[in-house]
Length: 197
Image (cartoon, rainbow, N blue to C red):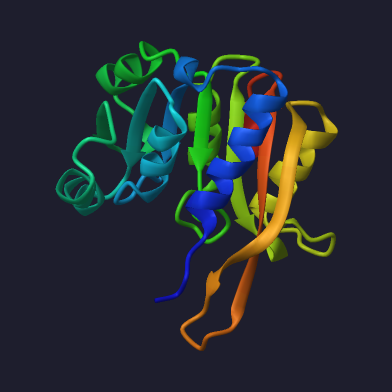
C-alpha cells in the first residue's frame, strides 16, 4: 500500500554496476543485512546471485522469510552482529562474502553503526557494498552517527563509489513521499572499529 521501491532500486543499481564491469552475478556471495522477510533477498536472488545469506536480529523476521520466501536464502542467522559468538562468526566468515546489501534499515537505530561495521568487515576486500539510506541522513547538515560514518568511509577511502541514485523509497502513512539515496560501492578496506563508536 505504501509503494516501497527500495528492493527493486537496489537490484537495478547492482545490475547496472555488474553489467558495466562485466561481472557475472552468479559469482556473488551476498550477505543481506537486516534481511527481514526477504524482500531484498528475493530481488538479489532474481538478479542471479549465486549465494544469498540473510542476517537479522529479530527471530520473527527469519520466520517470515521462511514462510513467505522459503527458497530465497541459503542460510539465515538470527543474531546481534555486535555480539557474535565464536561459532556464529566462524559460520559467517566461512561464507567468504563478496557482496553486502542493507536496504531501508540505516539511520533509524534498526542497524546501528557498530552492527553495520561488523557486517561490512565480513565482506572481502574489493567486494561490493549496496545500501540505501534516507536522504536526510546523508545531507550536509546532518551530523548523526551514520552520516559521519558514511562521509568518513568515502573521504578516507574505505569505499569508492560505483553508482548512486536518489529516488522515492515509499509513501508515508500520510501518503507523502519519502526520499532515499541508494549506493553501490567497492570496498577498499575494513572500517576501523573505533569509527562506529
